[in-house]
Amino acid sequence: MIDHLKKYWLVLLIALIGINYAGFYLLWESVGISDALEHVKSEQVIRKLKQKDFLYTLFVDAVLILDFSLILLLLFVAGRKIVQLIIKK
Image (cartoon, rainbow, N blue to C red; front, side, top):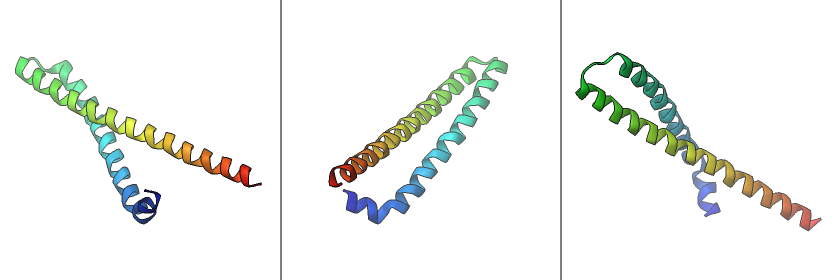
């Protein structure tokens, strides 16, 4: 698996940046939807905006979970490398 990551690390990095950009864009849109919910009087529009807000929040949460898992993976790999260096000495 590490060999595949060495080959495609640039593609994975670009994809991760794109996913994060989309997540922050949807987070910004979610703030706008929350603001619009305060001024809307139609129940149908309120329901539609709440559904859209829920989907945006779901995507943003998935992006945050992905980011935190990646951080934990990188910490694990770095810790393993440090332990290997200590054992070799």
